[in-house]
Image (cartoon, rainbow, N blue to C red; front, side, top):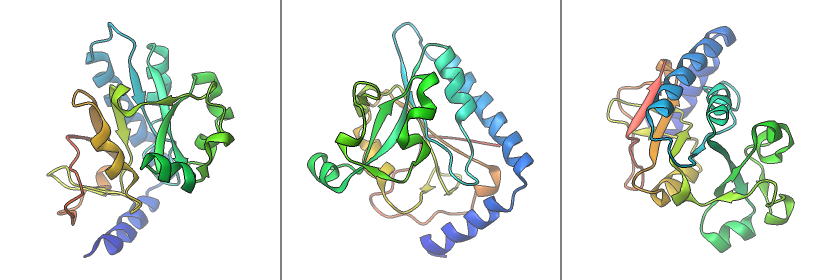
Length: 198
């Protein structure tokens, strides 16, 4: 099965999960992420990047809220306009969002929409350099026992993850139903060091 076929099959399987089941599994995943957060050295200000769940994805919202309560700065992906992406060589950046401002962040409400730099108040939602992240929670479509990750096909995280500090914890999250025997990979596909599933 190629990537496109596998992507369609796993998304259909994930979509078929009952909403209550997805919610319960997301709660378990978030609790496990909080455990990882609590084991981190919290002496210095820390920053975690999460994502706004779309459709039937595992939802890290409860984890983001818990991180903010613990004093962590929380950042979300913001897709860049074609001009800005060409200027920086990335299609995505991470922007810090205060817990009470999440509803005002257009890139959270519209996670796949591209925004020009002038569309976003950078004083209110500052860009967090990749090397400043202490932890990043990565969405995925499918994964296997080696940590291979199948994304949505845009390559945003494949380009972004290599820019992180070696000390940054990279954690994929998914439902157990998204585990497959083998994810087909290309040379640019990086396995995830940690995947939390339920």
